[in-house]
Image (cartoon, helix red, strand yellow):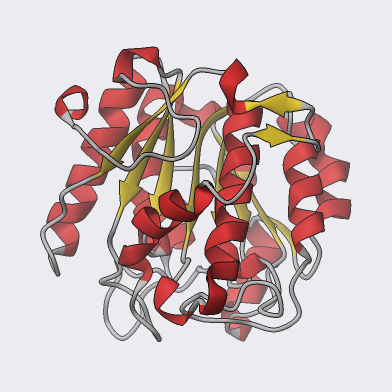
Length: 286
C-alpha cells in the first residue's frame, strides 16, 4: 500500500521513492479523541510546509539530512470520525514499514496514533521493546468520558502489551492523583524534568530496541502554544533538542511526534519547532 502513495509536498530532504528510505515518515491526520481543542489533523501537512523554513543541517548533531536515507510517504487516508478503522490503518502502515526492515516515524494527529504504531513495533520486537514517552500529561487514564481509546489513555493502552517496567515517562506535569500514584508505583516515572533523568537512564535503554513518542506539549506553551491542551511548566526547546542528542546511538526502531495544532499556532511557531524536532529525530534514527 505505502509504495503506491504519491505525495507532492514532502518533508524537506526526503528521497524520491519509498525504496530509498531507511526511515519512513507517515502522516496520521487523526484528532477524533482530543479532550479539548481539535485541529491536530492538520499538523502533518503544516509541518511539512514549514520544514522548508529551517536547514537540513543540524548543528546539534553535525549531520545533514542529505547524508541519510529517509522518505516521506505522505498522509494516510483515514475515515473521518471512525477511531477503530483509523487505528487499524495506522497499525497496518507501521507493520508494512517494519516488514520491509525500515523504521516508522509518524506525524500526528492526536496522541492516540501512538497506540497502533507501538502495537505494530511490539509485534516485531516483543518484550525487549522500551517505550520512551515525553509529554505534559500522563495519558494513563483507564478511559476518558467513557472512551477507552482516547489520547488521555494512550499510554495505559500501550501498557496492555508493553511491560510496565519497560515504559519511561519524562516531563509529566498534569494528570489525576490516581494517574500519578499508578505511574510512581508501576513505571519508570520522571515527572517535571526531561534531560537530567533521561541522561541517568540512557545506559539502561542502550541494549534494547526503543520507541519514542513526543507530545509537543512537553515543551512549555511559552514556546509551543499551538497545541490542543497546553500545560504551563514545561521544558524549553533547547532541552528537548539536547534530549534527542542524548538518545543518539540508541537502537531507535520507531518514533512519533503528536498534538501540534496549527489552528491555534500563531505565526507557525509550534509547527516550525515540530519540524526542527523531526529533523533531529530523523537524524538520530538513521
